[in-house]
Picture 1: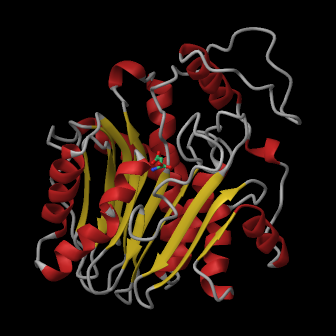
Picture 2 (picture 1 turned 90 degrees about the horizontal axis):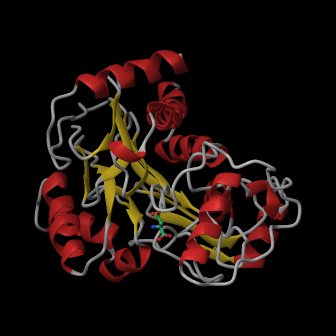
Length: 357
Ligand code: ASP
């Protein structure tokens, strides 16, 4: 199934017409579920990707969408589909969340995640998580099992353990590719390089051919917006943050309204990019407000915020989202964004570069 979807996606992407990233082609009818996901935005260009990498990223996005699809096909709720998809991303070392997250300048992994249910307006968020294997499940537990919305650091990990979520050493999140990328960035900027983390595999004795350039996939955050068959929407986002960040830094991802927002009265949105700018504009809830109060189509609302307002303050990145009435859209102002969308009974559409639909 997975290979069928992945190869379908590849064929579609390779034969798709060149369009700008801001054209929304897909809508869902009443009673159909819908999914739109991203795997991060940034300086992602064909020239910096090998065909194998290109294929692997598309397959990774397809696999996450397939996990959400499995939940929705069983009449599952949007929030459960969000969690299922984002756990798949968190297990995939290609993406900047869970295993494969970027490092702080201190050489540690600090993870942020959030989830929001558009039906109830309940939300859960966590930041600076260092030992919970699936931060998105922790965010969901905060939403559903605690009286709170936002837990950080030690308290968040401790809460995860009390609700039975799997705990791992921080070195579980280590990948050689992200480590080399951090080392390169710190050296380039004349900053001290921390010791290789305790528990990490030994340094390879030979240079690794497959390590990417530092900036090629600096972001790589993942997020998803889902509408279930009952018309309820939900959104979630999970990330390691930005490479080389100050430890203790929190980006937009877990800030409800900035990187993640969902309401059945407007839309569900997940963002990726330079988090500090997304926080300043409260990007996700601003898009939903334009839909709700100005009556704008989702695509127009996204373009207004991402292409105009975010660009005006020099923020870069993108958003994906959908509405309870079945509009699916994305918008980004970077050269690329890993992304995909699927409506029940329809064809999976996956893109990476700006000139893909
Ligand atoms: N928005 C995330 C952050 O600032 C990073 C990303 O989207 O890649 O933490």
